[in-house]
Length: 189
Image (tube, rainbow, N blue to C red; front, side, top):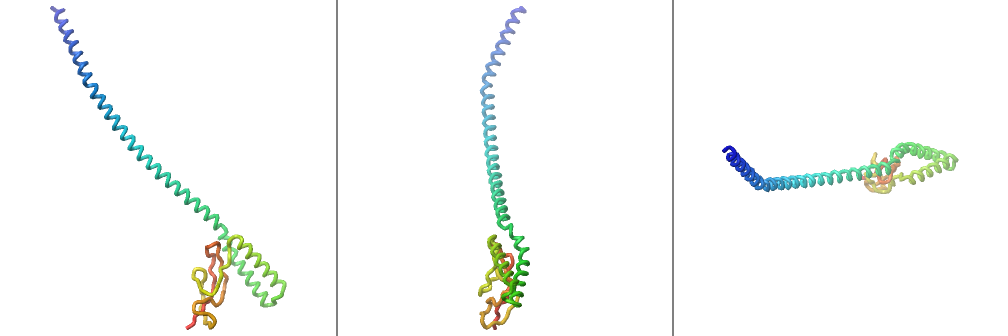
């Protein structure tokens, strides 16, 4: 009898195992579907993160290019205006030469000193012009961008607001004013 019960037990165990195996097979596709859904979700998350990182990369790259261009522009401006400081330092020297030349002419227009100063001033202006430093023209009309009116005088020959006399020569470096020309302008009532 024991053998019989044992056989029934064995067959019942086999049946349970078979049922379990079948049930496992039925559960298998649902686990596979869960895995597929999980993989799909992971893939979507990955694509979203990739897209965000790619956009951030593009922004950072654009910022880098903008900074690079700005630095290049600043560098070229610094090189372009490198002579400006030395030009400013030379202005008092030029003024001294012009003053000495004016005094030499007043004493004796034909003196060797007067001629030497004139040649020195001409040569200095040539060298300065070669490097973009030029005197500011003081024509008839007053321009506050290039002239500094330090006094007003009555003048029958000039119209109101026109330049009467240049008291100190002005200079510009390329398009930038180093020093405005000091002038007197006409004021007629």
